[in-house]
Length: 286
Ligand code: NAP
Image 1 (spheres, rainbow, N blue to C red):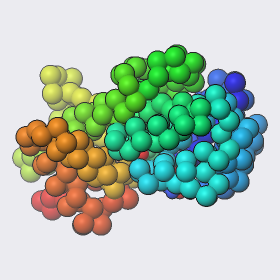
Image 2 (spheres, rainbow, N blue to C red):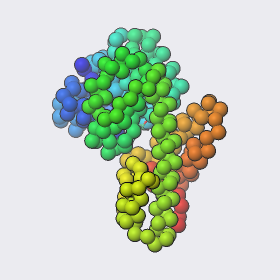
Image 3 (tube, rainbow, N blue to C red):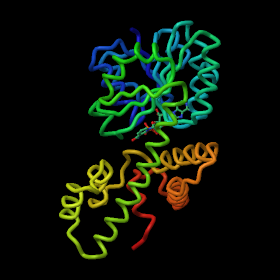
Image 4 (cartoon, rainbow, N blue to C red):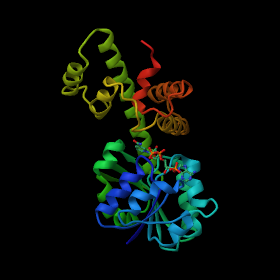
């Protein structure tokens, strides 16, 4: 299987690296071409446009920032769609709009190309370790065909149903994670103000019922004043905008989604967009 990979950012670069490690015949494209170099040095072939990459691939994985970026990579000038052959597969692992995902999938189906939406969770650490959680929507037979690729990048691979369901599942993930992140920031702020030892607080709370991935992985970064990304605030705000659109479409009262979206928008307005999402802690200046 010839595997193409477009988007070598914080997530894409280590995910592509794990595909190479697993022995896949890998070819890569990135808008900023220099980001292809470490993979080319290890045997991947680089292409200068998505169309050229697509013409040489049976399956193309995309992981870029937002909905318009996936649209540009798929259908823009020299986009993947102009190079893909009938029978090829696109696996979009970005977090984007579920509604637009279904549209993209229908457009590709007109040229005989099957598309899965397979967003991920687990952060940069999970991408590096190959332990991502992958939530996939689309045709089941296509999902089964792509399983060896998913197994090289993730540990928990779940088929969620029809096209768009992967993205909807990811919205659920983002709402739960965001509310958790707000709780982690508040807990550590209270601990600091109360004069508690931050390391002991991390240990005590992390081992009990309030422990979480966010607490264990991002809490220590906050305590060390390490606000490097990980997962950037601007991307989490984008995900909460998408989740807000979903709950609005569903006609739901969802206070956690509303509250998280407001706080992450405030962080963005404060100029924290390129910080890791643990930088939400800096919204409060106490
Ligand atoms: P990132 O480091 O900012 O990387 C973004 C990638 O997308 C880069 O390769 C960038 O190319 C490319 N890109 C953006 N816009 C493009 C366009 N219009 N045309 C072509 N390429 C474009 O972001 P990331 O953290 O890897 O996140 C990527 C996706 O994964 C996002 O949807 C995010 O929500 C999701 N995600 C991230 C995490 C995380 O912890 N970071 C976790 C789960 C899911 P350049 O190199 O040229 O800029």
